[in-house]
Image (tube, rainbow, N blue to C red; front, side, top):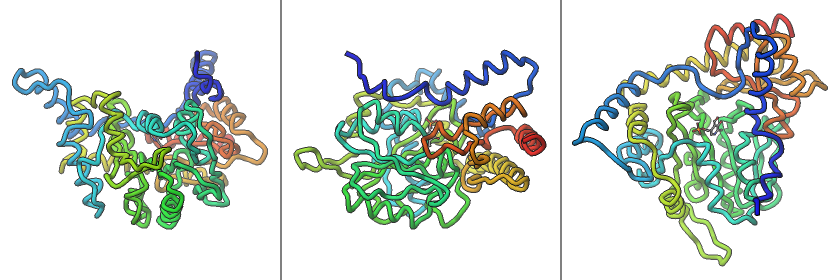
Length: 396
Ligand code: PLP
């Protein structure tokens, strides 16, 4: 028998549906100069330090004495140590290498993590947000409580009046480009502790935070170390979307109750899950990720982020000074464009493609509250991004 929950998912996955529309447009207009500011994929090449580290690792794999087969499912100690020291201990957060689980991407991590929870759990999910949280829980047949993120609350999800067992938070946010403040995160940690709820904190875009008052990690909030799991990725911080490397941070102190009231450490359960269903990220890739933290690699990946954030500034200021209302783009590579009253985000997608040959993402694809908004990404080429802004300002 089929899992009928799959039929609650709605249409095709957002980005494939949009890709099909763009492909049809190009088929019908083969000479059109289409600029893509739609899907959130990076365009800058890997940092030289990363490439060099991976080359060296390839040579090792071709050498009988240095060759490696299966590695630890949790990731090599050298990478887990680099992550714990640089991403946490350097920020005053006490995370050890044993609390890090290296993987081949955050998409699978955030989608897989819900497996640890009973089908009866009630899950809170911001609206709009990265669709994977919603779809992976719908597949499992769970009840979802949506948390509206609208202009009135600064697009920041607020704790619901009811109990939930787990909540996904995404900061900096995809798609709104906004970042959660320290007080907003403190409020969530207080809720989670009171309700014995788990926070699933996705900080895939933490490298884009420029506001010094905003935490990069949920563990910068006291008390979070007992109620939060953090998901991070090298995809957007170091251009690894095609190389694939990410990690889950799970402090030893996070414990959740079973139906019989018994308390279990999530760290051990996730280890059990990963060792059963995952055979580790490639050695070559993990050596590349390690180089992100090297003296040479660090400024190189910082320069990539700065390149995209300059694109974000061009979009934000270009459209803003032409009278559009724009959000985000200051602590995230996404700009959340408010559409003229009454125009649906799908209609705007068509108008943008047909009038100025620019591709973006309709806000409705990220949730009901995304209707009336449109996401533009800063991950494009500098000149093409400026060209797209120029076209929109001139013709729309
Ligand atoms: N989390 C968020 C919020 C994202 O926007 C994305 C990718 O767009 C991911 C996770 C997936 O990252 P990865 O490339 O590591 O699978």
